[in-house]
Image 1 (spheres, rainbow, N blue to C red):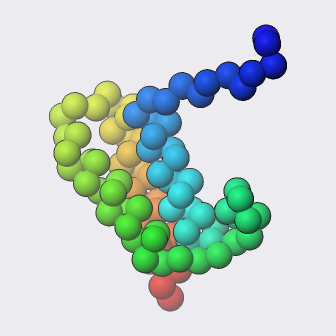
Image 2: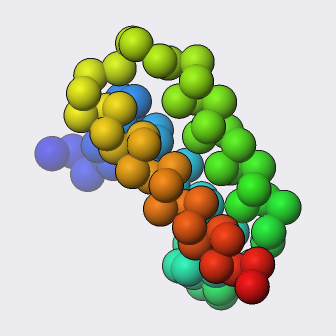
Length: 87
């Protein structure tokens, strides 16, 4: 290794995982990696959930079974956390 950071491979699952992490940050479930603080931003969380739902709709029939299951599970889990955060 030359000391340079190795480029991270991005695939569909990695993309979905990054959106999931963003939603968790917006819901205050995990700290923001930059500020190290947990802050709740409900509109941003809802926006990220909507993005995941649009991806599920637009990729229907084009994902592997593993990708579809990952996306479906994440949408379900994030929706439940979102609803819980509203109460």
